[in-house]
Length: 260
Ligand SMILES: Nc1ncnc2c1ncn2[C@@H]1O[C@H](COP(=O)(O)OP(=O)(O)OP(=O)(O)O)[C@@H](O)[C@H]1O
Ligand SMILES: [Mg+2]
Image 1 (cartoon, rainbow, N blue to C red):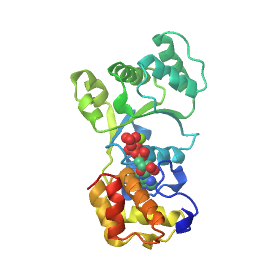
Image 2: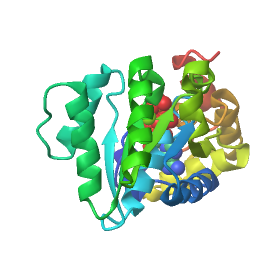
Image 3: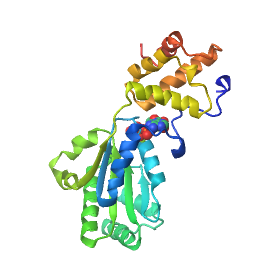
Image 4: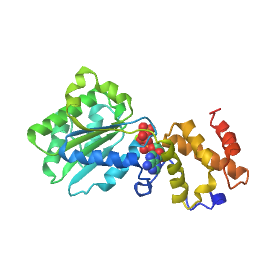
């Protein structure tokens, strides 16, 4: 990245919460998630790479621990017991043996906190049927005993198909906060590329305007796809000692990504 006089790596997979671009989708998602204050269950969906985990990073950074304690779990493929144990470990508790004890431990913990307890399950499309049913029971028990325990499921689109099945009607009926993340528009893709380059100390003119549109076309406005395409372009230009990415450079770089 020295070649482009960049301070740090743009378009990287891991971006700190404070370095994320606050695009309109994020704004809308954050404003929907604010309603979790009044809700028990929330669902965020979107295709892989659209920015669901990025949205969660922003959301968690904005929560005040006095009002809402957030527990983030992304190992959603674990068997249900393992998942409940993970939640307890993240809460600093030593999980007991047996599902009923795990349940009580989580509910007790929720009862003890002054703040709301929000359990976030990222990659929720990987949750097993058992885990979904157990989370539903956890939420139902929470209603009966009254602690402010909330659950946010965040997953790829097909979780919506799964939840349509009759055994999940209970859980679906309790979802009162929903947000579906969409791809970036053409204009947003341009702005995203400019933001990434500018934020890392580079000149947004590195990418010719038509190239930004081509990147949008090829990636459908998926931020992870845009990152991969932009990095391929930067690497190609670096290998050619060029400081500009024009359409010819884009075409060459894109062949490496098997787009042509
Ligand atoms: N608003 C944004 N600002 C900066 N980077 C973003 C933004 N939205 C998405 N990204 C970047 O796009 C990439 C993909 O985002 P993320 O990992 O959040 O997607 P995801 O929807 O969680 O995908 P998956 O379903 O595969 O987990 C990451 O590198 C992320 O930093
Ligand atoms: Mg993710």
